[in-house]
Image (tube, rainbow, N blue to C red):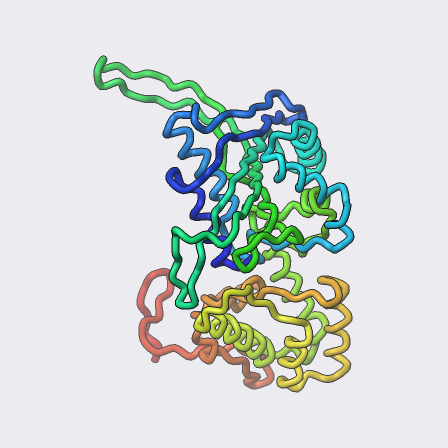
Length: 376
């Protein structure tokens, strides 16, 4: 699913848009014990509670593709008859009314998920009459081309709030509000099936994690029997280490700047072109950049081998996960400098009288500890 398709489904989660008849789920304590299960009609909930639940579900479709949201692609044999896919299909086809399937899902999540404290598993089922979209991208609301039936799961931490002091204006007295258990934003979740090309795709699902540094691979493995790529923050640090270690003496400032600039150009072109599909870069594309920098064949071979070891063969990365387009960080053991991402030309290295220097071209507006200084 691309960002446009995800946004279309996310817009469903509004009080006047959704067709969610009931919410199903369970409440789990810190010992991973189910202490309550529920199957509540949305019609019996108050307006405030309904809006809050819908908001929680909507957050499970937030964030960036390949960052918070990962496209899961099932293999053909999984769709034909694997237990994990059959479970998801039972939940979808029964609109969450299959008690045995719901219980199996709860137990699967509880056993796999590494999360501290209490948490809530929320399940919702919705049917979307997909409106016809004309060639000029105009949407005809009264003309539906298919019905997209799907389930959405949100796993939300539940934490104890703090006591609070309040003032009762009517009685002119202070009162203490006791701490309550509060449902937080989803930590993880998923959408099934995928909504690709604005159509149902039983070969896909969308997996969500809130934290870009922790994507709970153990949960994805349990739910989909699929290995997912390391978290975005880890992708960046791994790529940086891989580049520096394998290129060794060939890893100059010019080489690092060139790699960064080419990746940033890809990101800018993708954005300007409004290409709906997520942007990825292959190992071969990075190797071509290294080749243009004059990196030796031996170093490129080392890079290729280590890339496969760290990320896997034929794995593409999102450039947005491995470069920061907004700024460049130049760091030594004693000094850290942040440079505007579009002004890498201001930084250079030079050897003067046998000593290595990092030079930054400056004009006016130089400050040290907030004080403007003059360079003479």
